[in-house]
Picture 1 (cartoon, rainbow, N blue to C red):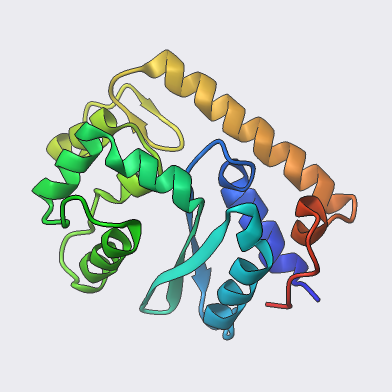
Picture 2 (picture 1 turned 90 degrees about the vertical axis):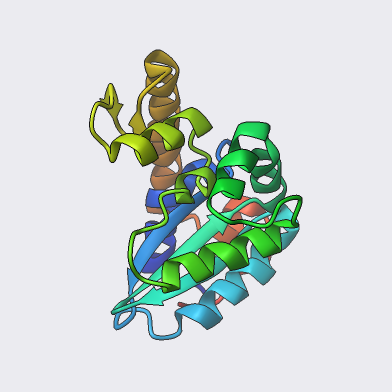
Length: 193
């Protein structure tokens, strides 16, 4: 079984990750609407894990769940880049740690309250220089606003945003034509949300 509503949210917000052109996406879901969400994301990970996808609840914040949909290999590679690794080290993430330890630290930062951990942009595959600029400027002075606030390579970001939009639209068209995530990936049906 599957949940059309859950899958539409995932496709709408996570298509670039689903197809492997972005390491991760974050979705916020209403806990009242998805009371079984922690179980559901585990079931989707089991169903789609062989295709390199993971779903993890990062936290339950007030009345919402924050769910990270990611490709572990791509995400680990992105976070290991020197500038990303340095930004994480500056935010007290363990150096040369496996992805699981970095995600554990991100969860701690989310649950600690206080300032939102803006290094989350690194986990979402944003360019390190844009994450660093956002941390410094608090969002002021960006040159383009789309999937993230762009401070540096505006034309490259525009092309990437367009690529993400096309990917989303293509997968949404397939869902509307009756496909499911399981059928898109050629795996047994994922469970109901």
